[in-house]
Image (tube, rainbow, N blue to C red; front, side, top):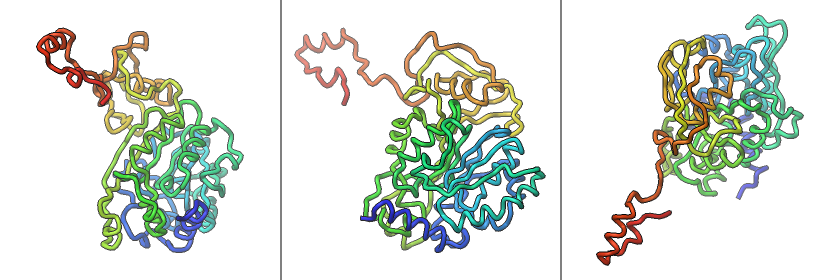
Length: 367
């Protein structure tokens, strides 16, 4: 069994020496399968060719409404997403990239002056730090100092994922969010596959079982993980396909808000919200997640968590709000849950008992 240090050294070797450009990847797990909004396409056209050629992400990790924000990029690599963010947060915003691979950081730092000049800034608004993402607490970053944290297909490469998520929660301001893409599996992956350096480096055997990830997110304080987009990954490599037979992999974009009032499940309080418009990047509709798209001018019923994800974040000024938390109506049924108990009433149960019918299982219970 490889220990955590051996895994980390394998990742450094794979991304610092084995991979020279994105064309050296052996599968399509580390790719960018999602469509890009026009404002991101425009910004991407200004990123240097050298930086783009060393991009190994698996999704789009750029949320909306970033101007003036402070953003942390975990596993920033050669800096593609950091430079995109540098453009989108504007000269008054700030972007910090953290990576542990010297070869990648050398490329990123070499390109800072190029992008500062390209964007017309008087001084850089982006910096890169060398660091272990399991030990973010050793980098001197201040608690609650970031409005958003992003990461692009990196957390699967980290052995201690709980440490990364817990430290991210600590570094975010209240109302901030972790907006990131990563790879997940339909099953827990056995250790012999985790030990394979190529499978691990290709962002596959380090992927979490999806339900383990959701439970871990809630454990560290992200009470209601929201899926923005998800797509299956096809491993177009016969040799690796055979090794991974029976395992299904998905590229998923999540957003996890740091909001203390969020509940573990979606609860109904009779609330509604209305998108007024006004976001340049979302003039007609705003997507909170894959199940919540708010059309401009349309009043929409929402659960308490969705209400707070808008009301207690940077998006508040673009919405009208209706209702409060004074009356609770139970679980919000559109969020996929219902009361788990039997709907057999006491009269039916009594009638069955009088007829000498065993009603233990009919009455319902935990199982």
